[in-house]
Length: 453
Image 1 (spheres, rainbow, N blue to C red):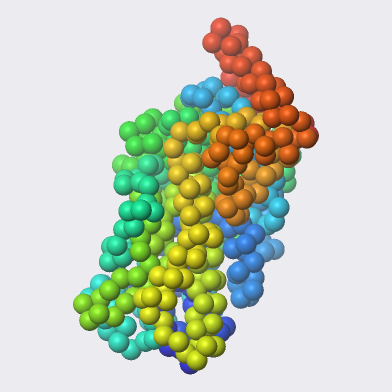
Image 2 (cartoon, rainbow, N blue to C red):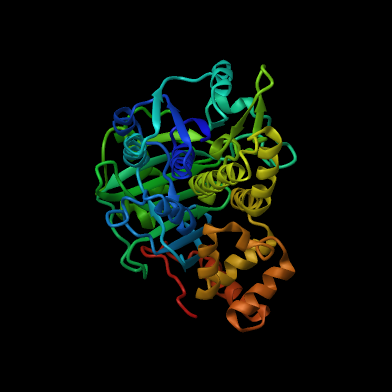
């Protein structure tokens, strides 16, 4: 029986722990906080999961809130060329389930369930110097501590990393009483408000800490921009008041959406900033032993691409299978060469397209992506493909970053020459913009959207 230690009790660490227990391993999970401390603590990630990640949880009997959590069935995106100036809208459906659950509820429940299934939960803080002790007494040690200092023992992979600093400063708020959008044709829509060059606002149906539906509202501001004004706030009420002010300034048609909103609890908000990076999956300890990273320890994504928790689930699922396969082949060692080889395969299948998609979403859109967004504003089929591909960003390529492929993709989806769609979209965008410049266009209370084929 393999004896495995996992440091970190987040989405990646817990899911790997459950997967290894199901494969017959003895698993010790080391966590800094107890389940009660997690449940009563500050809001962590707003982690929306798509169909593939949800299926991995379901296989392990961990999709525990399928009946309670809002089932997000589509996305509406407002693209604003500048504050208060809506350029176009895109709508699309997912082709599988999508749900977002407060990690305070989810992870605290999983921690208790982990012990119930025979896992060993140890509450202690682990520093880099402590890892040798764990490595000496286990067949493998996986580090899943996310964006903490412990991740720093894993070397940055410069060839795979694009950013060197946070591209957004952000805050997540969990609120009840949000006014619904009657004009959006989905039962439980998520909504994105993207303001070119300044940042984004995400409105996500959410299951809160106490198991009641609510919304997670995430503000992402380019550092130093008008959307970046949450860093010095001290209370939940200050955060909500600032959110209302930002919405009134940048997307006033959403002011009524937040008018009656209330924070679900005093700790239901969390500011932060992420430096998107790819690290090597192995770290060598002073003893010469190796430990392995997973989840946000080795691949960090900004929430704008919605890949963080999904990446963690996919990586944990794949590693549990890989560990079991080594055991089936005569208990082959879980060494650095094995982990490097496994991660190279994972990179090509999952992490590379996730990283590329994350880069595209964080930087100003390039011509191929602009062409896709314009087409999606006029074609529901293009919009559906754009939204559904969040589940597996490999589906975005090559059509999201290659102009010739983008045009071929548009023609296939619409059944028309790409130029026809491009001309129609530009006309639909250009006429209102001209009216706006001439002072003839008012800010819409409900942004218009084309709902053709």
